[in-house]
Image (cartoon, rainbow, N blue to C red; front, side, top):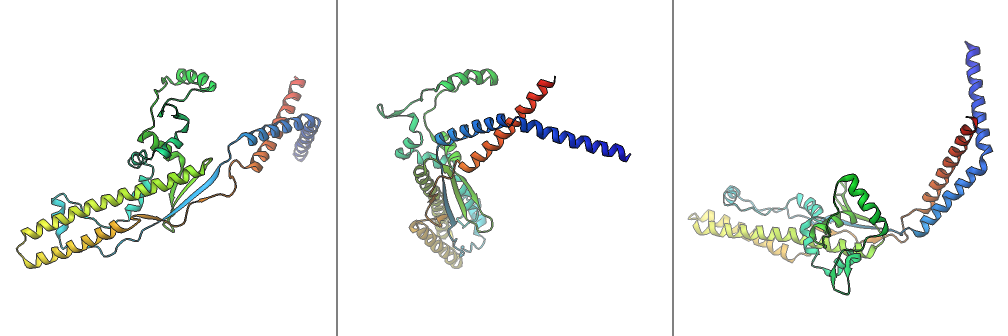
Length: 309
């Protein structure tokens, strides 16, 4: 049994030595494959778009803890179909969702300067309108093949609109909320950092204004509701409580109207990486070295198997 085991080990050692000997005999081919791989990686690095990292941090605006004491009037407000305005922690989450929503995109569409930059390849400066860009040679070849394989016809051209812009926003930058600090971080890898910075600034301003307008509308409805109740009330205590509610709501409306930021405010100014962060030259070259070596070794082993057949 020991002899059999020793024989197996010896066979394994012979196999490893033979494998190394085979690879070593094909070192010229392996070096050639590595050289080709590095050349291809170098060609890619020379032609790839340089992308910068963009980051923008936001923090929640401190909510007013002095919420009005409704004294049971919230039930009456609900029956009247009025939503009483209160500070909600979910507003910050709503702000995050709105950043890439069609509602914000529809308002951003009014900024023609940014829209022309975003859909630059579709803008016809001569006719001052958007038009379908001409198809590349690759698209002309792959289009019919894709249609044949998937059964989907080529879609008709759609000029930039809120729906398309919303899709672009979801791809242009990502947002994530840190559970420990409560900060919202917007990040992007882009070859157009100035465009992304302007877009982030605009969409955050629009989203904050939308939530602010909703709050003001709800607050005014509440004040009107309280005023109607005060006119119908016969109890001096009820009128006094309602007057206090109206005063508090009007104070909140005044503060909300005058404030620059309602839900979220920038923690710092947006930052752009000093140097391009993508593609990473060292990583690309290292991968090309490894892949070239593996490809060369595989070709050497295949060549030996073919010779032995």
